[in-house]
Length: 104
Image (cartoon, rainbow, N blue to C red):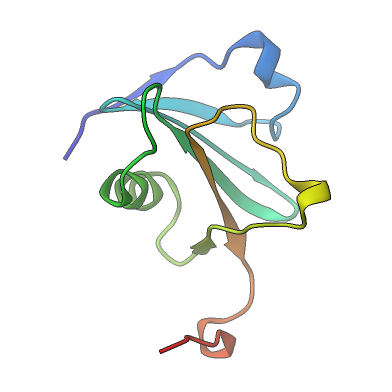
């Protein structure tokens, strides 16, 4: 398990985030987590590579309540935004677990 340390959010990024969003260093990754009326949002990035699945999972379970379902989404191209090439975003899914369809 990596150590989790809160870090300041760069001024250029603050205006783009949910009010009250917080930033953390988790191993070599930067994680930003916030909550709005739409629900929880978590972004995780690494300066040199994509974050690993284990890093994504660790950040999610450390920083978002366990009773929240999170998903990585790919919106239509016209809505796609990413300010860092090695960044992934997780968004809260508000549908109950039983309504999700799992492909097998």
